[in-house]
Length: 221
Image 1 (cartoon, rainbow, N blue to C red):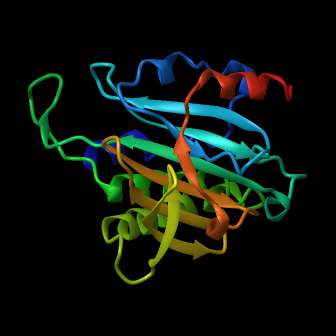
Image 2: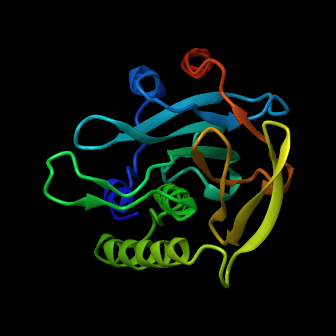
């Protein structure tokens, strides 16, 4: 999980304009992408993928609903979105440069990416800059510890459909939103986070055409 942590530990606080997000990285993945199932009829948009040093795509996220904004005039409590994180299931393996080993990915990897993703769109814009980094460091450490002990205290179990099959997820709520993490078929783990949309009514399914997310986002510009 260490390699996944390093890839995500500096959240991208200011989401790039949707039109600038390329679908190319998603198309390079050797695993299927997941999103909300057909019960969700709102906007869908691309976020970003994470890749290993050799360029192998390891994980990525897709957005649903209203894109979260960190603009001061936007209240985070008025935002309504859900982000689905797909993480390739990887065994313990040697790093691309041959100098070490990369830890296997797991449900904890999905929980960490989802937790840090939620953190990236809930940081306190009104907080004094000098205190902001301290807050971020503290919350990042908490998110990491919770992910490392997924299933322990602070998590509950929630069954949600994945490709129509009830699947157990680890679930937790916070003042900033909710986080989900579980395993699906197709050798992937699924994480999710959001706010303003109930986690209890969600369902996940394989995205048959990831380019449709890019087209959907372009249509909202």
